Amino acid sequence: MAEQTRVVIVGGGAAGFFAAIACAEKLGAAGTVTLYEATAHPLAKVRVSGGGRCNVTHACFEPRELVKRYPRGGRELLGAFHRWQPRDTVEWFAARGVETKTEEDGRMFPVTDDSATIVECLTRAAAEAGVTVVTSLGVRKVERLAREGAAPDFWITLTDATTVRCNRLLLATGGNKSSAGLTIAEALGHTIVPPVPSLFTFHIDDKRLEGLSGVSVENAVTSVAGTKLKESGPLLITHWGLSGPAILKLSAWGARELAERNYEFTVGVNFAPPHTRDTLVRELSGVREQNLRKQIATWSPFAMPQRLWERLVTSSGITPATPWAQVGNAALATLAGQVTAAEFKVVGKSLFKEEFVTCGGVRLGEVDFKTMESRVCPGLYFAGEVLDIDGITGGFNFQSAWTTGWLAGQALGG
Image 1: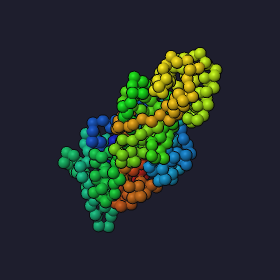
Image 2: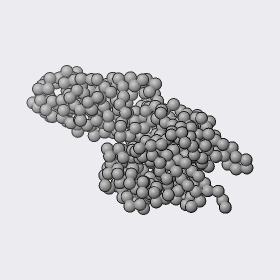
Image 3: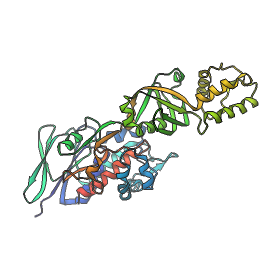
Image 4: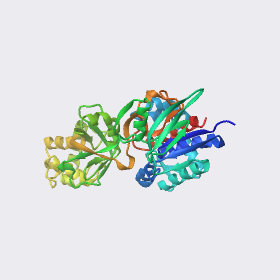
């Protein structure tokens, strides 16, 4: 009688669960799949993502376009996305009774607008596939044991000091500095790219932003002085500084560079793209001619919140009650600069708690992206953020988790 395949999966997040389900469904009665989650709450990040709605994926169904949303890992994911992409994710959940919807910006959510729908679906699918889920129990150490005439086994020491043995091992523990998966991977011969935060908001102490918490701009262009970093999208003013996709995307693409600067740099903001300072001066001159008697602060000629317009006016040294007719060319130029080229000193960061993401992790060249198996240690597999992969905000990090998890699961169960 053939020996049963014993598979252990470390990490009960999106990638770990997806891999466990794919593996167990393929293995059937030919093996066992056990998933260990160190905390009491598997799928915790799934539950809080998207403000509790779970941004499952993004409606980008062309792999070559999709990989452009990954500051790290895009090249390696191209082939992977040809095998499992957002359309496959949507169909997978639909086949299990979870319908999704697409919002204007391309983000996809369950129609229930409740992340519990996704958590329950994954939990149920794992149970139906025969996955054994063990919570509040992590992995402390892994040793690789050679077997004469057969593939090596893994001898695993759990956090309660008990031991288990398996033929194949998947690490899907996430990528933060305290990740047990990174420690284990390094001990088994892998190179670890030092992890740093990827999605974060900017701490700014500037009177121009005081009292404007909650004010948002539909589209702004942001940049980091002295770099080529530049992004666009919605911008949100918070009580600690700036947030929103225009900032989060900037932080993702600049994750390592901004970490090297110790999160102290100057961010430029154009509140009224596609205007430049020069085109806006001409526009404001025309507005002045048509509104001579109106007070400059009482009406914004652009699609921006009135409170923000008033603040930019006063920040330009113009008294709010000044009629347009009395605003000189020099003052107009200053105002145009505040609107299109405002500069703010960033003094730190705040992690974007709904989508905590890191860049860094297991070096990608050491992994076969057809199977997600280690090129260094046969029988060892990876999925999710334990790898040096991260995407911008908008469902892209979950999609890489589903893709790498599915590919790993197929190979583990093969």
